[in-house]
Length: 349
Ligand code: DOR
Ligand code: ZN
Image 1 (tube, rainbow, N blue to C red):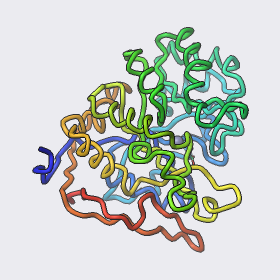
Image 2 (tube, rainbow, N blue to C red; image 1 turned 120 degrees about the horizontal axis):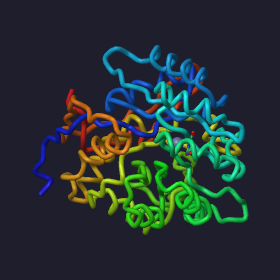
Image 3 (tube, rainbow, N blue to C red; image 1 turned 135 degrees about the vertical axis):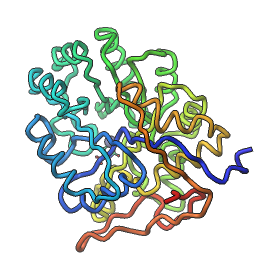
Image 4 (cartoon, rainbow, N blue to C red; image 1 turned 135 degrees about the horizontal axis):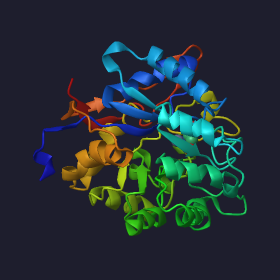
């Protein structure tokens, strides 16, 4: 039926998981988020992570200055949790709306996570305060023990870390970020709790681990959590097309320079801001679930975060749209996800 749709108009979406970086890179990537999204949750894993209110205020200013007038969005800031985070700092930051949430990176789980949490028990007193004040905890949910197979780290995290947190802090609001496995999908559905939600990225919806090795190794598809088997991709696609309100949009757009992606040790991260919303539209259409597209993009997130639903709308039209080949930054380049490829949906400006 959906092939007869020529246009889709939905409430303007928000992106609940974005990496913008800093300085020149920030200024070159920021508008791609602003074109599609009204608000964005900004990840704090800068080289010098955002661990207090002062840094967050400065970073937010930098973001606002980098925005162009015609594509402004509202940045919602997060605090990077460390073993030394002070609960007072979080509480003040949350009450003054400097922070919308705090981010838990297990130590050495991903980009700039060296000062992440070594042992979850170290921050139980912080989680207690967060539960009390209603501050959401955003989780990069992977175990980091190198004896655990990389493909099993997310599933293991559910048992070893998430389950105990949820038992101890039943009304702590948690977003399991960028879920990649059937286990996580099932966990969130079974919980069926207003305190637990999950974001799903466009790349995990359209790719599985085979894609990383098609016609040679594809370092540009390396992200964390790593792409999984097709059964997991299918579970994610079924989750969003079921209309379940516990899942919402979080692109995890994560730009890196070409020289850092194509390297002896390449960085994890996929810069999908130029295509994210168009990919989500394509997947919902393929799943014949466009009736749930708006709630995933624009309603479930604000409901979870107790924020108003946006008033503006956005219209996508069925018209071929070519994703830019690259973004030049001095001598460096960023290659976006699906660079040069043609998508079926365009934004109607
Ligand atoms: O692929 C990823 N890239 N996963 C993350 O968790 C972090 C991100 C980044 O900051 O580059
Ligand atoms: Zn991320």
